[in-house]
Image (tube, rainbow, N blue to C red):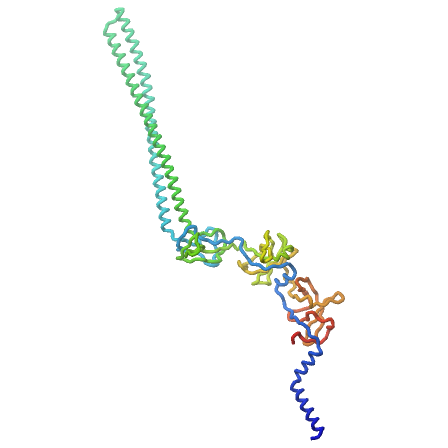
Length: 447
């Protein structure tokens, strides 16, 4: 075989190998002749991420300032449950009832005892009125007896004078002994009438004393009856209060967020570990008092001002900001977390707010509300090139980069808000080499 033939065969073999491995050879040549760059895809950030890049931010949860786990004031078995999770209740509404037949019977008995005590008081008061009327009659009898005594004493004195006159006339032999005897008889009769009237008067006075004693005793009985009424009323009130303890009522307007017991279960306000009794029946929250509990880093707490403005973003709905205000800053820090607790109240609210929802709070320096045209694009600070006061980035188009001017906004935490010049989906070069120019061929890092 001649030399030319061998050369031709070698060239054919070499060409075949080149054809088979053309793609790899071209890739190797491309890698050796082009710059390797790190590329980042532009995405549209939600409102909370943008806000976090323009102000001090902290994560937290929605909590309720007014929250209560309701329990009965007395142990018992639940016989009626009037609410479920999500039920809206007003202050004073009966949430649940416990078995109460024994307490109801005790209340009826106590009410009956009150009625008996009141009837006894009415009876002794009637006795007092009767005795007072009798006493008035007895006093009238004493007055009448005094009048009779005065009249009879006057008659006796007149009879005494008549007797003395008759005796003087008899001594002068002017009158007879019969006249003297009649005058003596009249005097004796008048004296007897005086004695009788005094006896009646004394008897009437004694009756008055006895009547006053009866009235005093009756009035003491009235006081005793009144005391018995108060005692019976106190027992009735105690029985009523015990019965009312079997009704679990809402202490404020709110919504039931958790039901801890069911009909048939036993509940007790003093439930301890190991006891089968439930401690609470339901948990309710006043949604009008929902606020944010946020943990702010110690290094950022200086940027949080009491009564300062804040924007609240729900993790579930990150694109909608809620206006808020810093209400309280805890006077102590958490040593373990190196954070300070901050409470933020909602200035506007809707039905999307739920207790224990995760949120992000952004503390702003001004009172300006969140705007719908806030920037939604954030890029790495290292991707921006500044030249002659203008800012631009290198946008990757296939295997070449193109310079594109952009308008930048605020910067925070290594991210810069882009107001104009980029759209979601663009791929930009991060930390571009100093030799990179418009139109330069490049390859992605790691490709």
